[in-house]
Image: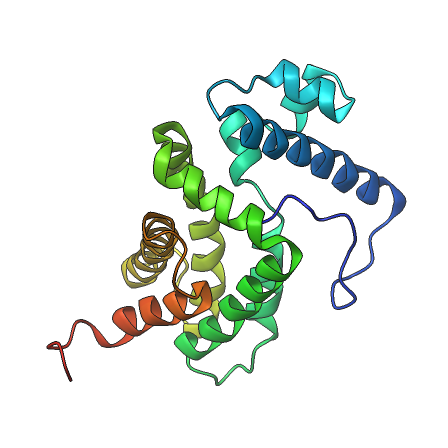
Length: 209
């Protein structure tokens, strides 16, 4: 959710030297990408320019991110979501667990670099290639959610109900990001996530109730 991740928060597991170097390289590539996009726009920004500013080779950029869109969208939050969901009490309702975990993820992302989070969602709303790639990449997060939700509900991760629930959640979160960007980031992002979960949990109610 952010490109300025140069240190590891205290509540996350400490990583080895090799993994820290990888994160440093990924961060440098993201920082360069966002700086160039801010200066000259998304379409004008090339992989070669990103590599030069990040002080790596173009092949290194492609090794970490297969496409330019992936630089904008890829983050390290899937493992965080998985570990946090697994750490929630076994008897806690799945929606309560999701509220807790998603609010924590949003809080961390906004605290680390709110401006980059806003830029990412704006690109998702304005650049068709980024939005399309986001929809493709959601399958990875959906698979992870199916595994964890299946375990917590005693259902198979590939069961119809689990798949529908996971994809409904993924689609809802994508709409949260697009709505937030299309409305000039006026609302509180965490509150929008809560409202989306309310819709998934309770459905649409008549206005005013």
